[in-house]
Image 1: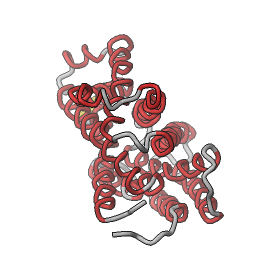
Image 2: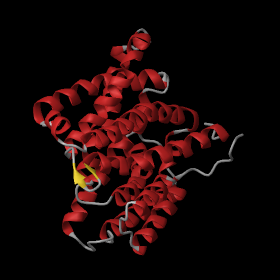
Image 3: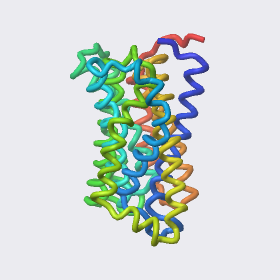
Image 4: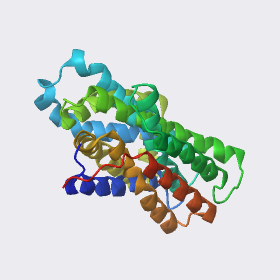
Length: 302
């Protein structure tokens, strides 16, 4: 795999997009600290907007899609890489800060290497396993020192939802690398959202009051704009770019986009006035050090 200037450029762009996603989720659920959409509505709308954006590409890529070969892996990619995490993150952000969610998102590479080793039997070095252990120590520290409510059982529980979301991301990364390496990134994204988009739409119209919120809440349109950006840019476009990065530079390098995501999330947290404890920053450094250890040390090709 080649990690060249193009790959690093994609890495930085994705970190900015996904680092901003956490505050967009927050804005989707409240505008000027006034409640708008529920956590479930924001998650469902995010998937729905991404799916609608990609629908025009469905016909063009239909002939390139082998349902027997790619159907199940692409469905898994959509569910674990987008659908389930969308709901887990918004549920988590009802009780924890967006900056903390962004910092915990850095666990993705750790789960990526664990799944590679124990599920797909990819060989791993002892240093990488040390890195995984160190990363989980940092995660426990991060959940324990959570800014406003140190050692809050509730906050730690909702932080666990983010941890579960990162596990889902790692499963998706490995599915893409293992089963979809020969499928176009755009085709994979288009069909992933074609599979999960209708599920999100049915959920929205049968299990939520999203239309009532749009019609009756004066701040709904502002939040809807935030969620549309979250869905179109933060999900649809970025998934295509991320799949491209996995294929060009490898799964572990691609998942290390989480090096910079927390920095962007912390920046937005400061602008939103969210409390960030020094212990959290220390824990973040521990996790980043762990990610450094699990990434294979190979010469960079330019």
